[in-house]
Image 1 (cartoon, rainbow, N blue to C red):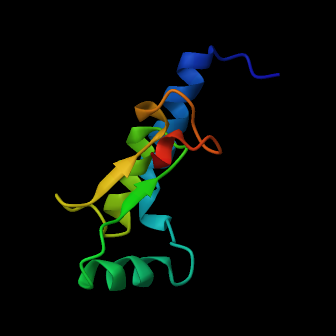
Image 2: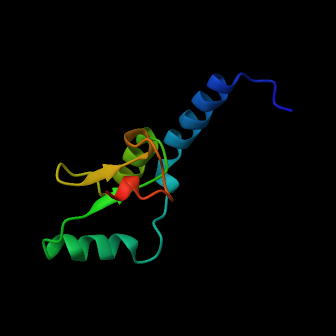
Length: 88
């Protein structure tokens, strides 16, 4: 098994992820739909089971990190998806 303390493993995981956000690719059509709805003035919130640091890195990498863009991540709720709490 891996002989690294959990906290160190998490730190390494985030360091690697954040160094490689330039390789992220959105699901086909997702950013376009987001921008179309934004142009129509329809409020949106990005909901994710990822930690805040990952959600913010993803939003920045995909060009969605704007002052008006809201997001909810697993750090914001007691019960993550599939519980409805993140959507309420």
